[in-house]
Picture (cartoon, rainbow over the protein chains, first blue to last red):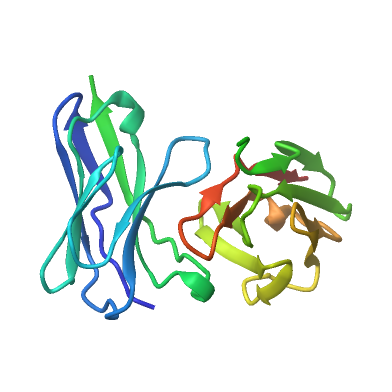
Length: 111
Length: 112
């Protein structure tokens, strides 16, 4: 399984962009990069995933390095509701089943 | 859709008692996962099913834990007998074709 490295914690101001980095230098060529987040007292929530190209959805953008050894989750305008632990997870998907959650990055958002 | 439904949301029981946690996955999803979260160990996968068949139960801690999925809309995780170290939040998740997973709200289990 690919090992990931994320900062333990980050702080942001409300309505400012947030860039959450993740290193996954041992990722296999077929693993997608998934991001999940866990708000306080809730279950994890899918955010976004990608393989090689940058990806956008209503929640966030995902920028993937050309060598795929790192990626950055971008929240364009942080809100108080975005305060959560963010997990970066290399994941093949399909019948390969299980997500392996690391410690993630705890994002605090200041009003 | 109501999302993944788990019951009960909170369970307090005494050591030695049997505990049954329940999960209703999202309709149409063919994968179901059971996770456990503690401060010490983080979020870890216990077992997952594909089309109601257990695929990987290597994360189940010991024989005291068992999981079943009798049909596509229901799964149980049973602990018998329960021990204080089983205290944790247990999450159920489901997905379609093994892609993004949708998690339930969790069951907070306290064993005294």
